[in-house]
Length: 313
Image 1 (spheres, rainbow, N blue to C red):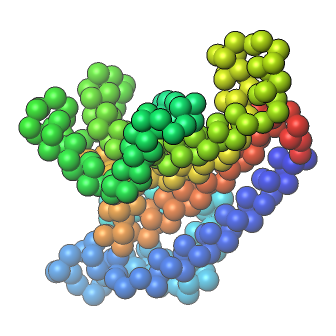
Image 2: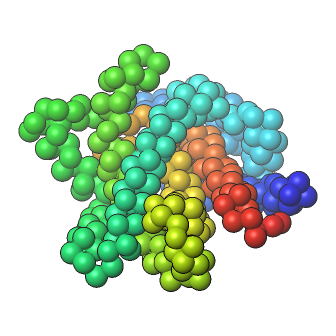
C-alpha cells in the first residue's frame, strides 16, 4: 500500500506540473492588461512601467513561469495585482467557506441519494420507484443557478425564513452560519444527489440479484442485516467513485452558486480574479483546484480496499 501511495503522489506531482504550465499559458494569452486595470483610466507611463517591472510582467513568459512555479513550490503564490495582498493568504481566508459549502452539499447529496436510490431499488416498478426516478431526473435537468434563484425568491424574499445571500463564519456566529449555508448547500446537494441516486439505485438492484444476497436470505438473516451488511456495502464501490468526483467538483469551487449566493469561497475569488485579470490569484486558485481533484481521487482509491477486502494494491 505504501508503494502504491508513493507512486500516486509522484504521478500527482507530474500532473500538477502539466496543469501549472497549461494554466499559466492560458491565463497569459487572455486579452487584458492587469496593471492597466489596477491603475484605472488615469495613470502616467512611468507608474505603469514601474508596476509592470515590480510584477515581473516585463520579463519573457518562460522567466515569469519559472519564477512563479519555484515560489509556488515553497507555498508562495505571489501577490495580488488588485489588492496587493499575498495570494496564499487570500486563498486560505476563502478556504473555510468553500469547505463548508462542499461538505454541506455532499451530506445533502448522500442523504438524498441513499434514501431515494435504496427505496426505489427495493420497490422496483412501484409508484415509489417512479417518483424517485422523476425526482432524480428533475434534479439533473434543472440548472443549479436557476434553482438557487428560486430558493432565494421563495425562502429568502417571499417567506423571509432564510438570509438570501452572504457568508458568516461559524466562529463568529454558528447559528447564522447554518442559516446562510442551508440554501446554497441544498441547491448544490440536490443536483449532486440526483446524479448519485441513479447510481445507488442501479448498484442496489445489481446487488439484490447476486448470489451472496440469496445465500444470506437462505440462512435466515434479517432483511435489515442483509441490506446493511451485504447489499449496501457491495453497492458502495461505484457510488464512492461518483461521490468522489462530485466532492472534487464541489471543492473546486462551485463558481455559479457562489456568485448567486455571494458566498465568499474560492469560486467567487476565482471569478473576481478573472474579471480583474488578477493572474497570481487565478493561477493559485486553479492550482489548488487541481490539488483537490488529485487528493480526492487518491482517497477514493484507498477507500476501495477498505470497503471491499478483495481489492488490493
